[in-house]
Image (cartoon, rainbow, N blue to C red; front, side, top):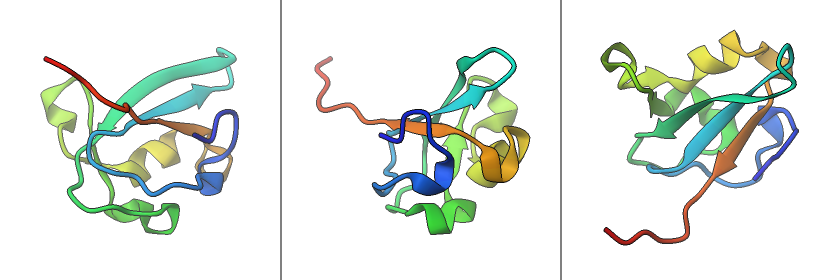
Amino acid sequence: YNNNSVYTNLSVKMKAGDVLQFYSSSLGRYRHSVIVVSQTDYGVADYTKVKVAQHSSQYNYRPLSELIENYGRSSCKMRLLRFKSATY
């Protein structure tokens, strides 16, 4: 969802387990992925309430707002990936 568009254009609510990817304009591609760990569905208007996890333990419950700030603020491109199913 929301490929090549700024985060405010995301049209679906984020859910725990969704993957968010952030675009790097200097590289010309998406380069950073995080997993939504919030237990409640949130829309983009409530992005400050969304918590995400990254690969390092110091960022295992990080506010999404910090990443949006780091990846361009109002021009931050973010897409959402949602898995349909998984079998383990």
